[in-house]
Structure formats: structure tokens, C-alpha cells
Amino acid sequence: MTFRVSKSVSFSINQRQTFKNSAPPPYGFCYLDGQLQKDPREYPTLQIIEKQRQLGRTPTEIAKFLSDKGFKTRHGVSWRQAHVFNIVQRLKNSKANQ
Image 1: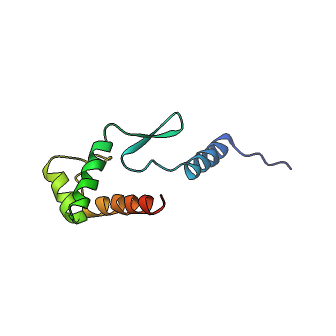
Image 2: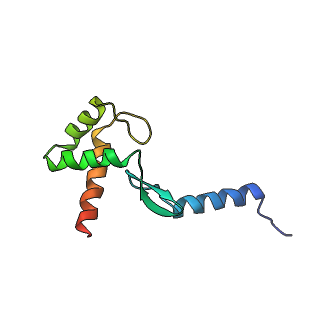
């Protein structure tokens, strides 16, 4: 008796492996030809977040500032404290690793 993997199962496995090996780019960046590049739609917002952080604003204050100005997240929703907090943590970690 021989077992064969159906095409739908093998395709599903390939999809999972591809997703597992590739993560979405950090906020403010995108992949272009496999290289991480500044995203022209998000990078200006990332700069605003960094500037607000340098001014001593909390993630909650930054989220309110962005939402009040009409900025939306990558997924088109209003900014929340958790969104900003995660971005700020990534910025801190990337600066610590430089």
C-alpha cells in the first residue's frame, strides 16, 4: 500500500513553511526585491512617532496625537497605545543593537 500526499495538503504545507520563514516587515518599511526598504506610506509616520518619543510623549499620548491627526495604522485602523508601544520597543531595541 502506498500513500500519496494530496496536492491540497502539500500546498498547505508549503504555504505554512513560506509564512513561517518570512515575517511582515517592521512598521515603516517594506520588502522590495527581497530587500528591506523605507515604505513611502509609513516611514513619515514612523518619523513622527520617533520625534514624539524624543519629546517625552508616552505611547498613549502618541497614539492619541496620530489618531487626532487622522493617521491610520498599516491595517487602516485608528492608532492605539499597544501599536505605538510595540513600534517604540522595536526602535529602542534596534538602537541598542547598533
